[in-house]
Image (cartoon, rainbow, N blue to C red; front, side, top):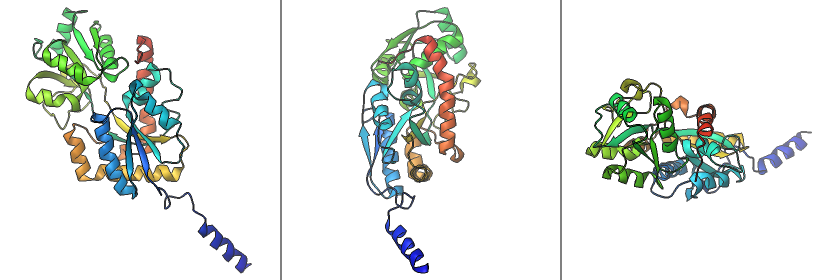
Length: 322
């Protein structure tokens, strides 16, 4: 009997186990849903580099663009659930897209949450020529010029589009929504004075705010930005609970083994604790979630809550992606 048990133990030891000790054993792919050079790509490359160190394997960034990030979403949703193909995305790709596009995958059910990695509220900004000196005056000016005030958005179905519709619903005054192919051309026209307002990621617009080329009225969060403590929150400025953040997170395909999820989450947590990573993200205007907000369980709950918050409004407004 002892000989048999010894033989079984020897055989078991020779078979590769799907455990945290054997994963990963080869290169991983982090699929970025937007072109190189944008905020999501930059965050993805920062995380991929440091996660590779934590995992002992290279994490390659793959830019899979188009259809508001949904082509990349489909690529990861259909990938083998082995932990080697990961998705980085945000409010637009993993929440708004589910209501604004006809998809062949589910933005919630077809992904295994790993961790939230960065949070970036929007800023309510306007061209320098707008006469309002604070948010209350801005809202009064919009109401006095209803149907005339132009708001730039970074495309139909984008977070800035949802924010513009949310804003006009909250204040009870319609605006002219002007679509662009991305936030960069929208910002260019705001700087040129061709449009009046914009809702933009703080990471994108802070350099222009600091340069004094546009006005910032509030940050769409409950706390001020560490990178811009002089900009009031929407609550402080008079638009209570107008919260909207472009949060970034990383997912794997649904049914990825638990040991791989745990290993990947640990690599993300280790990366976010690295002072060099924290500084690079802070320099981008990104805020890092607290340690207790870096769990798969937290991301799953937060993701679900965001869907429940935004989908009814998106569908009621008839917002569609392009």
